[in-house]
Image 1 (tube, rainbow, N blue to C red):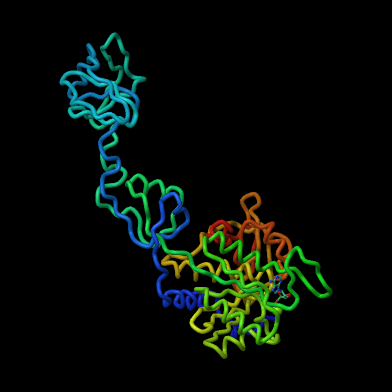
Image 2 (cartoon, rainbow, N blue to C red):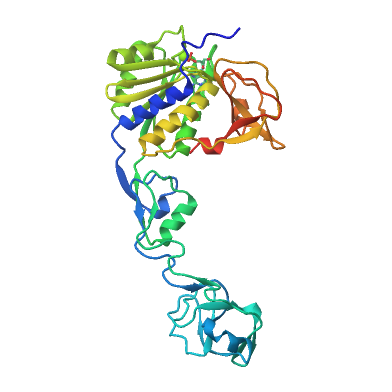
Length: 406
Ligand code: AMP
Ligand code: MG
């Protein structure tokens, strides 16, 4: 039997509310960092290029530079080699009726307009005879071919990748304005939790969400304030939230929001701020909280380990990105044919932990929300939208973890 949809909030709506909440926060301050430390940081301002890249016309080949008007002579009796130009030199103008030996990246001398590659040139004494025609501009990389002076090379909100650092360097920029990291407090709720390394007592389990969240936040380059394990206790809940709220830009909790549970987190948030508790149309997931404690936003994730991971990736990640000034927060998704069938039609969007196998996607291991090892086997998530079945070969949206972690 399908459950009624009424009380479940579609994931897209939850995402929109979260992005709106993030946009309403004061923008993260900007800081300047040396370019070498800027990988994965998010640009706070657009960057302009103050000069042409490359700065001057230069050779794309090892060969001979000439004026194309001298081509007939080059193909016939040959041209005298009047100078030798290597990268980093500032050449004299080309003597009319001659050519210049030139190497890749070396400036084209005034008077030359093309380069013949050395494989097509026979050198006898100091005469270069060409075996093939060459046309104007051939093998010349013109000034500004890469970037023109005054161009905007990167927009605010861009996350800097390796190639972006290279482009910024090519523009001669040594320091970049980036958004400072968010200070994110994480809180693991539950009387049953014990830290790895300690001994498990009866009824206890190890705290895994703390490490999943640490990993997610480290991948995103944010500053983590570890709020430790919060026992299921009303007074401790309030005092811990207070203490974390004083240091953090955001609190992320896991657990303590399941239906029917003594809802200390909910009570504290209701008493000291605003509270929105949602039942999301997502699996794994469902309970999710967007709240404020004093003036600090709190995102309450479900406690089941797979649900913590999936709701972080699909909802918290875009929220964090938006707070860092990123406009487009959608993760990479690729259509990949299903390598399996499923006839159960759920009333929630189901994100399966999945692997790629022979160009198809297949679920990885046990998909229970309490099982995390299947997420470790998986390379990404696939979406089975609420109310749909899966047929073999049908394209499904595949979200590689790599795209979801940044
Ligand atoms: P809760 O939302 O607190 O009822 O938790 C739902 C399920 O997730 C329970 O089985 C908890 O034991 C489990 N759980 C909650 N927090 C954690 C955690 N930090 N690490 C591992 N499992 C957890
Ligand atoms: Mg709990």
